[in-house]
Length: 397
Image (cartoon, rainbow, N blue to C red; front, side):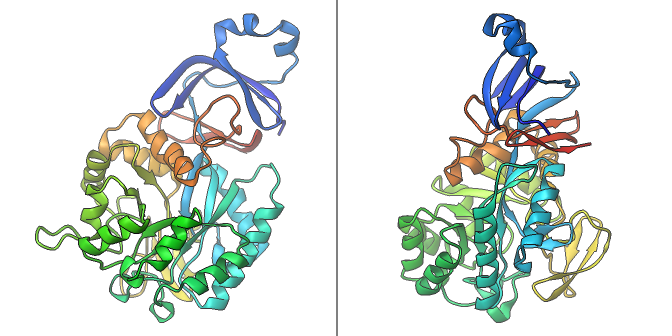
């Protein structure tokens, strides 16, 4: 659990970079030195490096940056909408086992009061965080209730509403400024007042659960829309005469995309198409996972709805897919399998891109001197062996 340690003769995989036979020094939760292992005696006096605890690393493994999940509702029988400190603690405790070191607690379309309660709880949790063996909550992803009914998916339709800037301001106040990401249907904000407000206040505006035409999406881009939530899900499919959100997502460079690479939400061939069109630096892997993750097959609650989980597929009674049970290291493995991308590219899609989108790339997203010591030791099949969160060993297989 020590926060000061030395790793030697390791392979570091960063976005667009691989360092072999390297050493890493961590002190007080930060990476303080990286270099070639053969030069360690030149870079430090023997007294310096021999006095730091050395952690042995299997040479057949690699170190990758801690993964960042910007869209996760819950795991291990806990959900953001439970609005309890215990729920967020459970989520933060569980995520390092899949290589996730940072996340956005994600809400669900519910009543105004239920969302307010969840936001107040998230704010209190965020303010009380200290470097520890928990994944760091970087803020809140407000998913809903500004969605269109036709593309609601598993978002409870009875709570959907038009985009309301005063309600959003009220929620941001309840969240003490921790709302970092808002998913909404652009057609529910026809005068773009909410999207402009999000842009002006540094919050990411993302299109989701939308039946918008490509013209409506293009207008929203002009006012500050920069992202698309769970590409291909909760939107029009690709059509040669009626292009909608999916077409705009793939063709407009202003838009980054997130995708659920579990092979259930999106066919592997479509995941590969998105990768080919957007490239590894415009795609983010997410889980969109629910409380059923890490648990057995069975029935679970999602916003007052019964979700049945069989294998890797959660669904409502009418067959609608309802979130996922995907883990981030599985998403990394799948994006490699589905696209043939290099591990360095997968690292960009699981860490770096999210860090840049959130504006925390000065301390997250890659393994570099001065950054938080968030990194993951992975085996040959992207299995998680160890995870460090800000220098603390948070998970060991």
